[in-house]
Length: 125
Image (cartoon, rainbow, N blue to C red):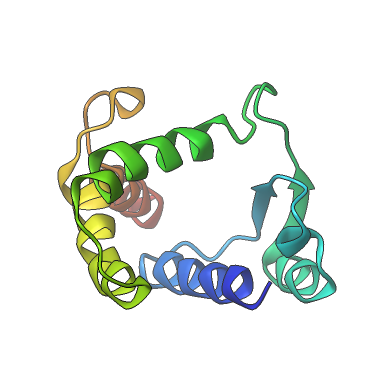
């Protein structure tokens, strides 16, 4: 639950730096990390939380796809010796996934370019 809250806090920091200051809707599954009081209070600070199912339109299917990409395009391609090695390599995966990998659902743009162009459009309006 602490890692889930920390990750949410970090994501909000990135959004704020990009000029996105609106309340957000946090979607997750019903795992214990996400239904904990700690995480729920953080969600209420930033907006609100809803529990989604994989099969639900707009649900957690996109997160399941991220997990699959992580496993097959990154984790399973390395010979890890420890969890410390995995943790140390995570920034490389995040950079590749968000800044280099083109996503068909985004018209073959990267998530970062989509986020920054959206933020720029909002700031110009």
